[in-house]
Image 1 (cartoon, rainbow, N blue to C red):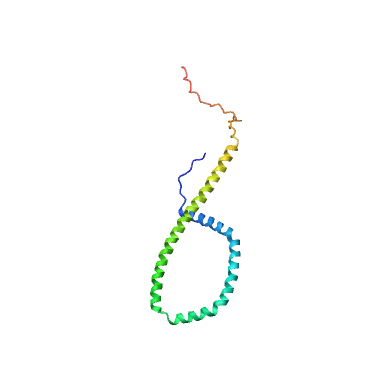
Image 2: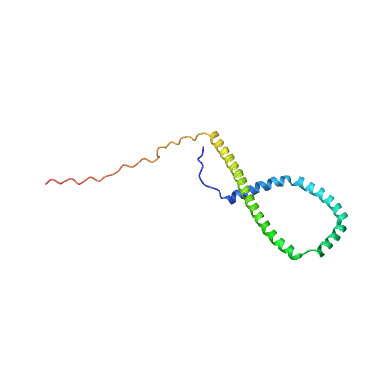
Length: 152
């Protein structure tokens, strides 16, 4: 079995993998959602045509009786509260995507390791390589002999 390294994949890559997996899951639901939305749109159009006149009259009355200064203050405080909630939800969604990505990547790594290990097990042991004798014979080493002393 191969030894796993201690390298860590950065969280944004896990988040991207998780987002891709989530997008794929949601895209598979798309045909059913389109059908439902089409049916709801047709029903909403029928209701909207019936109530458009009455709604326009009531909105005209509300517009003349509205305190816009109070509405502006309420909108500012509500916007701040909504921004904080949105930030908390974004952090939670990011954390969920990272966790999902870790599962997706982890599953892929385990599956890849299983395939590699199965290939290793089914592969034959390599044959031992033996050294072949050299085709060229080594030359004899020629040494010069020391001169012999001359006898007088």
